[in-house]
Image 1 (cartoon, rainbow, N blue to C red):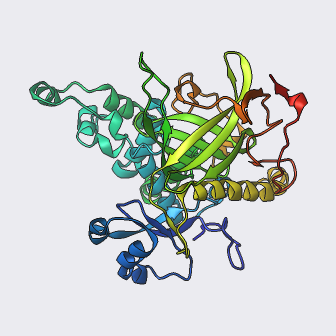
Image 2 (image 1 turned 120 degrees about the vertical axis):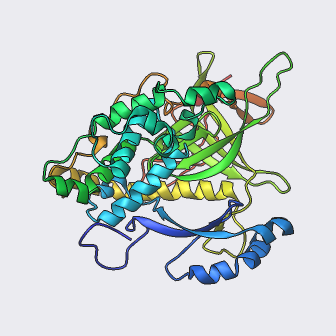
Image 3 (image 1 turned 180 degrees about the vertical axis):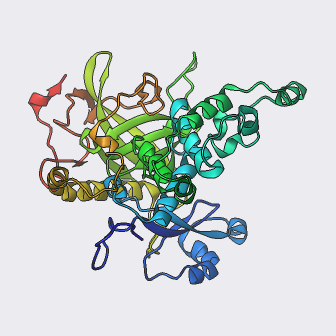
Length: 423
């Protein structure tokens, strides 16, 4: 499904704005192809789970599939600016709003309020002075802001406070942002009839998030050793993979732990028998002032996903590794067309805002979208036989063969040499 015009022939993987998938509460998913029939898959769901997963029989018996219509990961953000179909814009808006409210897209408080204000405009209409009040927004605050920004205390004191007229910082900030939402020039009836400008404004704001439009995977990483006993453990994370790079997000704290563009990383996956599959990410860093390559292990305890009904299950680590490689190939294939488009300029509706990527904004200090490498437990060395040697960064040598190279679509092994090593 695409809201742009003049798209003839059979659409490719990046030509559809949305794709269908069947998923379940057990985080098992089937990415549908055009030939698939969702009704038949639903009828055969339990049989498919027994055949392709190692889920317990009790879980299979209780599992219920749901059909979901999602944004195509391979659909470029710049193509969204060319969409004029109101229903396609609404679908993109609804999915983005759901990801923001569920904190799948971590946002700073200021951005959450700006996005929540646009939701207020869509659901409540143009701002009218004195209506609604901040206290009125409090009753359905979770419809406009992520749940972790709406948390309140429990008990008698919280109940008595809820009856008061004093507004909290969340609803007051939301109301102030709602007041600042701009209306498109035109008659009042046109304002009520068309929500497309506000859908587009919401999407443009989400485009500033580096992980917008990503495919998300569940995983775990090692915690840094803490305390006298150096206890570690693991923490749950979400791995977001898009056409622009990879982001590792702390699922509990709702902030980015690591954000890398493809040219900043090397990667690979391992799937040992009877052990968890692992996605390895390698990137540049320093250890006590010495430049080193850092290795991050992302464990995948998630059950195998079903992608287009394969004959053999695919581990999540293997899927993430393949998706990174495919996103790089798509990005490289699209690069030659980018200068032409920037010179000619894409067709856009009158009064539409330019892509935010043309004027990148400075990130706030301590922003939730900034990397927090100090919160990661990484391996800062490359093992060579019995000795452990530091290596210079900038991808001059790599522990892995998979990385973005200068050649179009090629992945060549980089061989370490004695001149690149330090004892």
